[in-house]
Amino acid sequence: MELTFLTHKKILLVDDEKEILNMVSSFLKEDGFSEIQTAETVTQALTILKEWKPDFAILDVMLPDGDGFSLLKQMRNYTQIPVLFLTARGEDEDRLNGLGLGADDYLVKPFLPKELLLRTEIILRRYYKEENPLVQLADSKIDFERAQVWKQGKKLPLTAKEYDILQALYRNAGRIVTIDQLCEAAWGENPYGYENSLMAHIRRIREKIEENPSKPVSLITVKGLGYKLVLR
Image 1 (cartoon, one colour):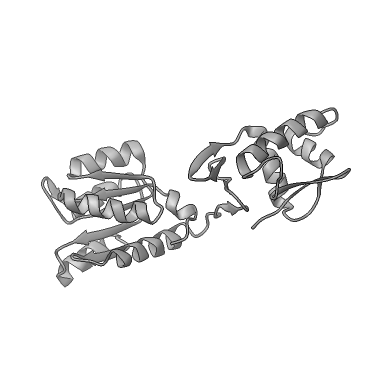
Image 2 (cartoon, rainbow, N blue to C red):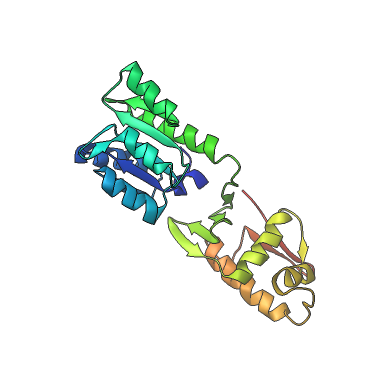
C-alpha cells in the first residue's frame, strides 16, 4: 500500500498470543504503519484505549480476562473507532455477534497477511474518507492536519508561520502567490515590512521540504513577483 495519511493512524492490536501480536505488528510496519500498540488482555486494552486514543483496533475474541465482544461493548463507552475481529473462531454465530456489536469486519485465523492489510486499508479509507491526504511534493509530504512534514522517514514539525505560509501556497498550488499575499497570510491585515521575515521563513520551509534547499523544485521563487508551490 502506498504511504498515505492512512499509515499515520494509530492501531491497537489485542491478542493473548504474543506470536500473533508480533506477526501482525510486523506486517503493518512493513506496510508503512508506524503507530502501533499491543495488549494481551481486556484490562490492558482499555487502559491503552483511554490514554493513547487509537484510530483503529484489531481484536481477538478469546482473551484471558474476558472476550473481544465484551471489550468492544466497553470500548463503545469511549470511542466509535472502527474495529476488525481477528480470531480462530469462525462460526457464523460468533461472526454475526461481532458484526452486530458494531465491528467493521471479521477475519478468521489462519489468514493471509495481504488480506489483513487489504481489509485494514479498506476499513480506514471508508471510515476516514473525509480526511485530507498528505500533500505530495517532489521530496517530501506535508501533513497539514498535524502541522508537520515527512521527509526521508522523518517527522519535521512546522511552526505556526510556516504552516500559514504553506497553507496559502497550497491553496494556490501551481500559481504564483505574491509576497504581499504571503505576508498577509502569516502576519494579518498589515503585512508591510515583513518581507525579510518572509524570506527567512521560506528558507526554513525549504530546508524541511526540499532535498536540496539551495536548488528548490517544490517551492519556487518567481523573481519580482512571489513564490509558487509545485505538487508532484
